[in-house]
Image (cartoon, rainbow, N blue to C red):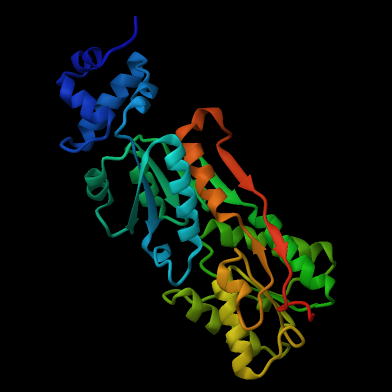
Length: 326
């Protein structure tokens, strides 16, 4: 005989309505009561998959505030398109929520009453742990934490392809401009960069690996990092930037100081945002299927037990005039 919500209510010592609200993550309950009901439901073997048949399913797509300005960096805007497309196929309602470590994220989520959570990009560990305590289906996009389902572009391979391309053009002082190394994707791209140098027998120069200063937006931070590289006694002859917005800032600095791209400085970005192809010098970059990341994230949340906990999507090197003269 299958377990009912009345069975859960009796064992937990709460009302049937409380059980229903806890299992659907609705408002009006403390976190302690919600966790108690969910723990009892698991102990009794209640099949929570039956809740997926309801018409009121909601998925909240959370973005850190540093990622939420699509005008500055449209990457997650395209990921959101993929999320919305997949949600329509599953018949669920997506909501976008921008939040940060200082925000009352639990209170914000209660207003949305989500059945599942999808997180885009970097989040502080304390925020991730807090969200995990809600015991909702959850997955990460463009980020990774141990034990959490995630989907990412192949950042290591992308960094390797970018650097190998520059080395193959005869460049020998290839720099890497990074953002905060707290970001999983930036660390992984750096790993690919270093691997390509090693395979080519090029000695890694720590002066050529520059992290953009904290507290600045992508454009300003990358510009500061590029000017630091140009002050070296032996400046680089190529730059791999951690994303396209940073690479476009590098192009601007080169133009300001009179360096020709690609003759004096070859530049590669990552992501293939629309501005990359339309820059004054079209940007060589690694193409990421951003919509596919969003679709895969929703799939991972909705069909989690049926899928691998970690999914890696391929990237493609797109060669343009910032590295090769046509």
